[in-house]
Amino acid sequence: MKMHLMTLMAFALPALAAPPACPPTLPEDVCKLEEQLYLHTDFHETGQVREVMVGLKNLLIAHHQGDESLREHILGLVDHVVEEAHAVRAPKSILEFATGQPILFPMDRKLREWEKAHGAVVPLDWELPDGVRLLDLEIGKSYDPQSDRTEYEVGLWGGADAMGQVEDLRVTRYPDQPLLDKHKLGGWHESVMSEGTGDKKVVLFSLGAGDMEAPPREGLYLLDLKLVGQPPVKGWFILARTTPTSLPVIKSPSLGQVFSDARPRFRWLDFHSPQHRAFEHRKRIMGVRRLVDDSSAWKMMEINPPGQTSLASPVPLKAGEYVFNVSFAERWLTAGGFFIGRKSDIGIPFRVVR
Image (tube, rainbow, N blue to C red; front, side):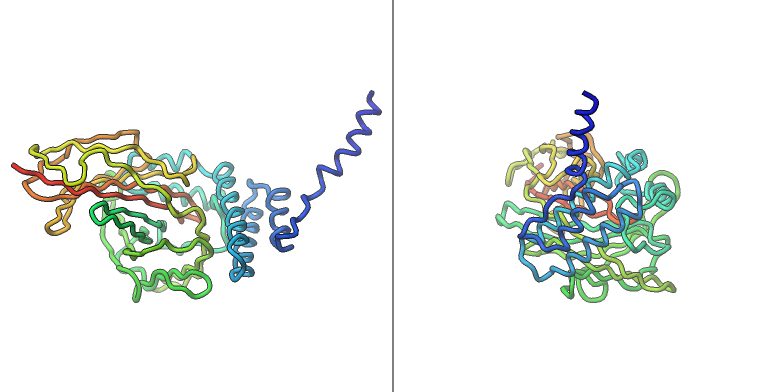
């Protein structure tokens, strides 16, 4: 019996060790990296994960003029790396530190300290410069029921130690399609915001462009970032699974509903996009803005919110026309201190009469 078992193992082991056959429809370099990813990558090892991510970048460069199905296949491999890296490498207790907060600060400091000691969750071959605490790039989808119009936006925001530090900031879809440019394309803003509780402040900067008929195509993007007095950073990242295919649902108000109560109750459904994965950070943003001047009556933001689905207006609303907006953002890490995500938004107009 023992001899029989050893004979079976002798036949079985070579079959287990052999790499999967490369389908004839896939280029050899893609198959080779796929074999490296699934058979030879230990996700506890920062260098091995970085090597795979750099290899995926190089595949997207080599095949950027290839057919769509090949690009989708490579992006599927990126998706696998991101998911596996978060399962194995992410400091969940640190990321959960942001739960209930309106922004990712001051959690970012703990995250960057952890990544410096253990390696980035999704390690790439570049790092954010000193002075930039984090970056977050989101692809947004919004729907206006009054005009029956869907539009897309892209926004890149970050945290800095001081005002006026960002000299240049550009995002380009490989090889040469501009998406954002601090000086030429998109709106640039800087502001100071409280960093959680206490007296500490953080400088928020943002660069965004909206009113797009289609979302930015997924694939390889180049990031050029220059801080005052520092050498330029030539970074890159890969957009995959970033376009939401559904929208939140608002139950109240209905389109054009009239309220006689100065504190109407708003109702919505809790939302996860079809693209959402369990490891992603969620953020709910809701608020009311005045139609007359597009100013905010109130706004609330919460990371990893509970399943709350209704709220009475926290401030009394004067007679007038308003829009109630609900947005849900879902995001994950790529590179050190760099989040990527998707956002889904809907707004319903209503009136208050007194």
